[in-house]
Length: 637
Image 1 (cartoon, helix red, strand yellow):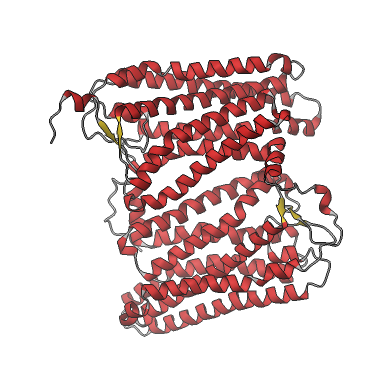
Image 2 (cartoon, helix red, strand yellow; image 1 turned 90 degrees about the vertical axis):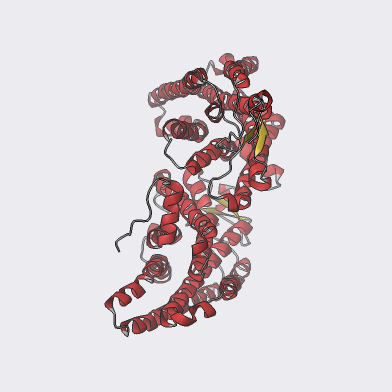
């Protein structure tokens, strides 16, 4: 061990951490994180460019939005080098001076963002409560002075703890718990009394972010009181509150991760280190990523300008009545008859989508990092998880846009692409379920030959065959739709571009489309179900020939998860298929709800079923998120 000289104690190299326990897949984790950084940088640069070049946006609210985009951009550019250095290049060391510089800039931008959000809340309060005096109260010069005051507040308040952090000695080998420098981390590894820094940091958070959040809540209480006192009716209330939606979303995107990270750091001493790291990355990435998306969707001028930049045309609501031709765009209606409840319906849909992403990504990570799970059945489970992620992501973001922002417009090409991917992926999922049934059949009926039959190369070939089959069977559908004329309307009474929902809009002969769709559905669902049923008949016959009751129970137990997944996947699919084909008197919203259940339930429940029923997956998840818990205890079946 090196001697503790004054040089290496006072100015050491500090260690940075990645994702504990997942070091082997850091390069894979780096891909979505880098993508998030890239989208955040591009999104905020786009916001700044549009506000700079669009004279109609030279207003106080958009000046504050430009400040918000600048702070988000600074936050991304400050943390990205060390985060990506750890994940992709194993650069796990940082000098104390560089760490202090990064810490100062990161926290300054965080405090600045909190202050800007408070200023934006004040802007909305003045615009709604004092509309006639708004332009007199918030002039351009006053907005600039507010921005300067916020900048000085965010930087000067950080000077005292930075002086102490510079003077603290740091022991060699000190490793931070994140891939970037935070104040809480640095005082944890200092070899000195850090009571002042801890108390000052806690007081500073309460005086800045705490007070900002308090004043934001007071502003919205006064706004709500004013709006409810208006005599213009529901339409006036909706318009007034509609101007605040983007800001409320931005406030939630910032404060929820901040509060979560603070709670984990203060009270989560026994929580998994992985939880600290995940919360830290959400705190850094979520606001810069979401703010440009929120304001681009909800601000008409920004939305229109972005579409002009990429040379797109906004589909007009007036285009619902078309001349006989191929429309350039369609309009997704959502759930007919339940439009008033779209925002409420978005809550469970968004929650399920988050569960889908978390559950299936967990399955993929656990199988990738657990050598005991590198076997054929788990490879098929990986395929199932990847397909579920892709299928839900093909549809649910657009569904949420319809529910939240009435963003039902979709270009014709995008509609056909969405239709192709959703149906092709569903066909692939059916093929994977058939392959899993075949895997169970060989494992139970020919256990001694299972290892030689189900090799890695065979599993890969079966996966490729599933992809090729889904692609080839669904490939003709977009071209068959392209030849149709849509002379009645371009409004699709659905939440996504489903094949039959699009075909029903055509005014010509659609018999070829309907016949082909029916044949493919019967071939895929009917054929796969037939062979799955045949496999289980042979499995039951083989198991019933076993002499031991315990052996029968174990053999059937290995099929329990797969049977549950089959029921979860095929039940909504069959209901949706039969109501579309034969349920002419069924209410339209029932069709749509069944179709959405078909895309929501299997991707959500499949990881839960396999996570609960597969011992290795269950124990690996418990080790990651509850490291202190004993997973060796037997689980009664």
